[in-house]
Amino acid sequence: MPVRIATFNVENLMSRFDFSGFRNNLNMDRSLQLFQIQDEAQFRQLEQARAIAHADDTRQLTALAIAETHADILCLQEVDNIGALNAFEFGYLFKMVGEGYRHKYMVEGNDSRGIDVAVLLRDQTRYGEPIEFVSMTSHAHVTYDDFGLYDPQLGLVGITANERIFKRDCLEIDVRIAGKPLSLFVCHFKSMGSPRNGLDGRTSTMPVRLAEAKAVRRIISDKFAASGGPADKHWLICGDFNDYRERVVIGGDSMSGYTFAPVNDPASCVDVLLEGGFCENLVERRPIMDRWTLYHTRGPQERHLCQLDYILASPELARSNGKVLPDIIRNGQPHRTIFPPGQEVDRFPRTGWDRPKASDHCPVAVTLDMV
Image (cartoon, rainbow, N blue to C red):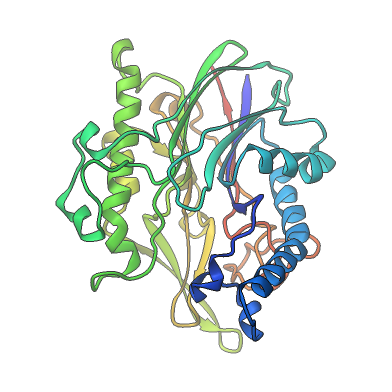
């Protein structure tokens, strides 16, 4: 009884306008910075017009990327609220997949911008097996003190022990596929951010992601402790971890030719979850040059491809699906993304050089047999 599961950071699926750019140039869209704006009222008018004009093409591409996953269960990150999700499905996704994802689940998490994680379910798999929702549990309330995970390094980024661990949530969804139980843990870990305290953004925020990963592992271990432990159960951790174990560093240019060099990174929050065979990163079954889900650039001096988006499978699911390879849908990437040789794809119609695009992330999808 196969089921297809996908995870996708849809990049700011918002139902409201962000006017914070008027007081903070770092938040102001680059197109508005070209103009002399007289006051906040004029800024609000221009921002509304810009956002609306940009949204239609973007969400068409987002919907195309989701449709390409052919997922029965869809885990999303960066969703504003259930209203935004309903409007997106009715106005865009429905036109491509029909009455597919009738069941939507999300809880307001801890993100200061209001972006949350969500899960969408079909009534049945593409093979006709019923998908039954069982329960939903939010872990957004868990603090460092609750789990004993406070590290003094967190104090360097202004975090105290009584604060909540998850920057968004670890949303736990239990379902049954043709009667077989499956637990999903959907996450969106702390972003790397900007350099701080003399450290680069990834290093300075690493303690937060390490704590989030340890908390996810604790939640899963506690859940199955009374039934013999998590190793022989069916569960997945899905989402955007904002961290990588390796990168493909890009050098050169379009004139001399690009170079692509895989580089392993010494530490990652993902290691916490994989350590001791707790679970398996299914994407690592793909060749090292072909695991990336995001193109990062700060100009020609800093460019790489990396995996930020994960489907981690329990040992039992990984064992019983030992030859399964996940798919990474890259057709919604902007044309500025530099692909290694042989990986080029046909972009979706109307994809731009930088925007519009489906998202800065690529969806990851996999078909698993629930034996």
